[in-house]
Length: 592
Image (cartoon, rainbow, N blue to C red; front, side):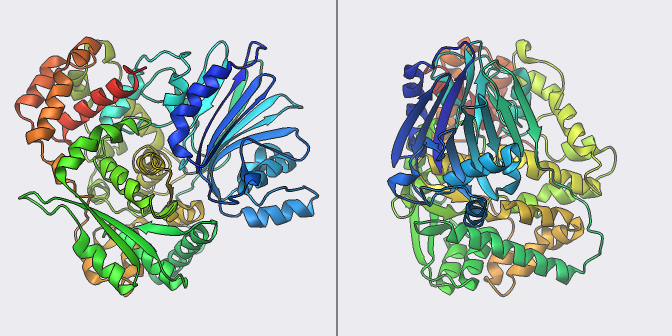
């Protein structure tokens, strides 16, 4: 896990070294262990390292191959790198380190663009071929690792976050109307390649790109998820066994491929509890687990320790619990927003930020349960969509979209009232011959597109803010492929995640399996009152907000007059959505 950045000049001049300094500072938190820069003609590479594999100086980046033709910057982990290393040695390639980074660069030398098809893991990387004068960039199949880019007349720039690109001063900060529509319709999900900022783009998951000094940019998809039944039918028991075995392999890979200890973020829910059980089943001893909780509100408990404690006790884990007072949540909220590459509405981002701060003092790598709900149909809206009738767009939107187009037009100022871009996006993804049924298409859309820019991005941002690597076994692409072919009715059983619940039975306490679907309890940010309400009111009523002119002021005034009355279909506060977006702009755009 690391932070990367770089640029390719289009005008024949070397990249300004001051740009490297400013970009490096914006990704520094992702890699506290080492830093490096590389200049070669029209190209500049930079890197901030979090040392996980081959902790020696041999793992330093930017890295060159033995021929010095290829140079690389890489963020992520390749779980099959030992096998690939053996294969490449057999083909005559030389290695100076034990790192997965060097495996990627030799894989590119061997297989060219097709190297990405060999890689099993999470990754974003760039390789410069000095002989062919070509820049190659790639992002993993599930979009776990971020890769942003921007293009100017001077050149092509890329980085692990948009802030590094904006820090060069080369790119405008105008808001993208399409990105804004997705932001407010899909609860802060802006699918690649767009972002909220018109000049900033992101490489799409499962794509690679080639860029030349002449300014030619091409991109190509190298992996597609099929949501279709296998040729031979399987019983429910056979599906359970197959998914158990695949998940076990995913957990093992994310445990053994590291030269540092690996912990688990134990929330008290089914997903993270099952990870602990499978680690124990795999023979792992002294499992380190971490849980976080907050102060109670009269309406609900602020922690899930009653569920996480029994799991930790059953498997005798080395368990640490952190209880955060509500006052600290609000005090630290600005820090969490500062760590967001893009504006995120999920309030548990703050919880992950505070948890990661504590966990990073003990370990550098953790496994996390993100992705299980999307892969195995754990959310309440999937069953509602499945039961609904009518066109696919309506069945999906009626149970998912935060604001219908008319309300979006009422939310924003007239300059941003364009077409119903989100409806067009949804229809494109659901109208596919790569899924057997409507619900197959929904889950495929969620797993390949929506999950990338909500929970996955949130966990990456909040953990990497503290130099902590989060690994997500439920998004192992081989497990995802298997789950996508599983009949939806097996996933919908037992009120969602039926397959996982049946696998978990006997491995974790029944109380954890049978509890209602929970969400990270953050009472201080769930109930729109007191200091939290005042923070949002001050943000939206600020002069900067008024001068920006993003919102329809009448709409904002209605939200402020009834702060606990306006919620989305997924129970998100529309006031929070508006305030968070404005505050993110103040932190990341106005501060430039």
